[in-house]
Length: 104
Image 1: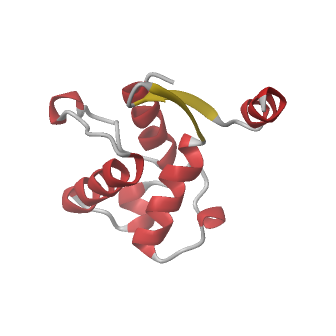
Image 2: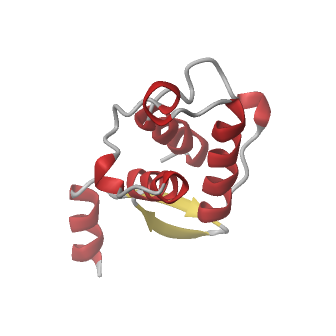
């Protein structure tokens, strides 16, 4: 089991604490998967540099819908007071925001 967890970490899988237990999460894959389902595309077609507004035609409502979907997917809740300029410009910035929130 430990070897598998180490292998996952080597592939970019992140470890986070959730509900009092350790969970292994690939935050990038989960955020990208959620976004892909929203826009009807394959996750592989959404590289980290994908811009939400310019490339996916997102507006502020779409960004909030993405955040709500990520909350539901990950079983977490974001504090709107932590939303800052630039937090949601690209797929990579959304992933970074989620990681900061999860402290992974």
